[in-house]
Amino acid sequence: MPASEPAKRRSSGKRSTGRSAGSDAHRGSGHSNVARAMRSAAQQLEELLGRAPESVSKLQPTEDGWEADVEVLELERIPETTSVMASYRVTLDKKGELVSYERMRRYARGQIDRRG
Image (cartoon, rainbow, N blue to C red):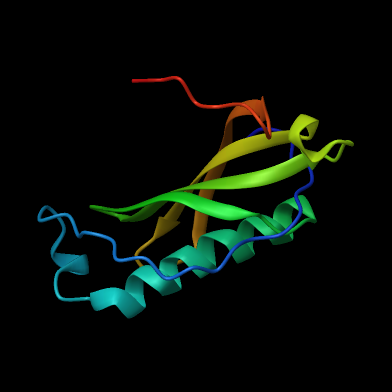
C-alpha cells in the first residue's frame, strides 16, 4: 500500500448505480447496499488518511466485495482550482471492510479529465 496523504470532505449525493450481473452477493441488494458501500469506502479511507474524502467517483461490485474510486483533497491552495486532488482506488470485502487502497493519480482540482 502507498504512503497515505490527507483529504478534505466527502459529498453525499444519492445516485442510482447499476449492479453487475456477475456477483450473486450483490444481486437484489438494492440501493441501500450501494449507499452503504460508498459510505464505508469513504469512512475507512478517511481513517487511514486523516481527512474526509470529497466524493466517491466510482463504485462497482466485484466477486469479492466492492471497488471504489474516492477523490481526496491532498493540498489546499488558493484559488481552489489549483488545489491538488488525488484519486484513490479502495477495495472492500463482502462485509464492507477495507482490504486495500492505492493512489491512482494526482491532479489539479480545476483540471478536466481528457481521457476517452
